[in-house]
Image (cartoon, rainbow, N blue to C red; front, top):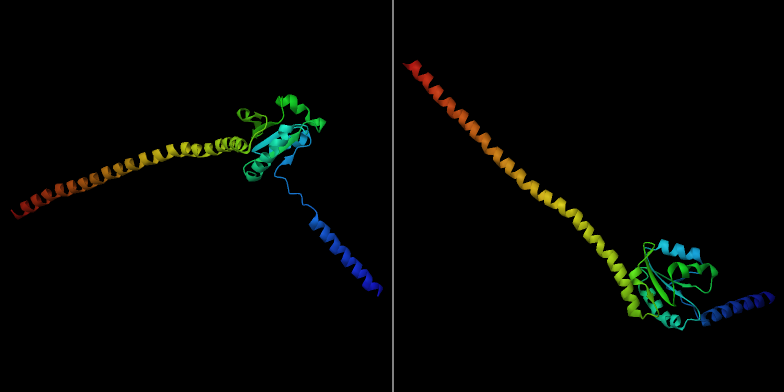
Length: 204
């Protein structure tokens, strides 16, 4: 009887725990990273070929208004670039970034490519979702468009050389073939008169 009570209590506790976990609101995984210190910031910028970082502060109303647009762009374009936010008022180690990057207002959005800032894409103030998307598309499109051009420039001279060599080789073979035939015919014609003359002398 005691064993049954213990098993019943254990089963009830498990069911209660499962019910509480299901009822609790689930916090969705963030589509961006929070850079909470300077070393984390440096690693993030270095390890991503292209990334977007928003520098903000908790008291900034414009930063809060921009948050939904930033989350949506980060969710849709996570395969293109890395996305992160850095609260410059939260961690003292991030304070040097204010002077280093010349940040004068919140929020400031900076795009990095190959570890370096794309200066023409820096923006101060709140950005809408289309504005953020265009900023990212300009950066990634420039990087992708350069690859086909380099391949065409490298292949073009090789193709021209191959096209120029083939007709020359054909002309050389065609020019050499008739010469051999003419020489053989000339030798045969030169031998026939000699044979006729010798036979004629013997008969006489």
